[in-house]
Length: 264
Ligand code: MF3
Ligand code: CO
Ligand code: CO
Image (cartoon, rainbow, N blue to C red; front, top):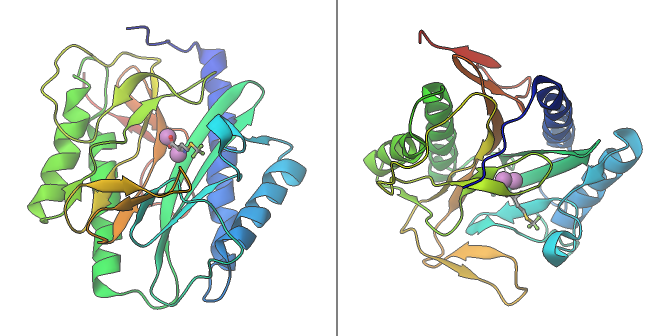
């Protein structure tokens, strides 16, 4: 296993690109209302990334993905393709997943938005999914096993009788969009990987209101729940520090510290 350890000057670049990705999610919020299409939201993000940030939307063309961000609505789990014919409706929940490349380094983050007045189940699913991501972030420090991340997330999700998607996981990130290790969101009882200072990974739990099975649509990208239940996802890019972690993609609307420290 080759898990790259980033040097301080490399982490500085990842902090910068991480903040660009976070800013896209902050910027897009006021555009989310009933009637707007996911294609239009993608277009707004694309223009912001390209013209304002002078950065690259890393998803565009990645393994042939045709748009600049992924937008996954309701029962869509991930990799939703933005479309001008897909219009948002009151009560919809959607994930926007933004990956930016700038100066050779990647930042990857996503969050849920709710259109207009939330439904009870939609709001609960989003809250619990976010809570599971935050709980995982709060245990990270050098010396813990990678599997503790998945274990923490799985416990929180299953207590609520929701389920953790198995087929898609978080990942190492840096010069590459996806690098080692794979970060599972459930416990696979693999003790082999220990977190170390300078590792940069994403944590991005996908949580279904029903069972965890998924199906990929004929477009080759859009992943939906098999039982058509709602699905939610939140994602952050983090770096392991000497005594905890730093959230490289933190946003101003989040009520948590950017740097988390523990007694070692
Ligand atoms: N951003 C996704 C992730 O979190 C990957 C999207 S790949 C794409 O890993 F091609 F669909 F954009
Ligand atoms: Co990711
Ligand atoms: Co992502």
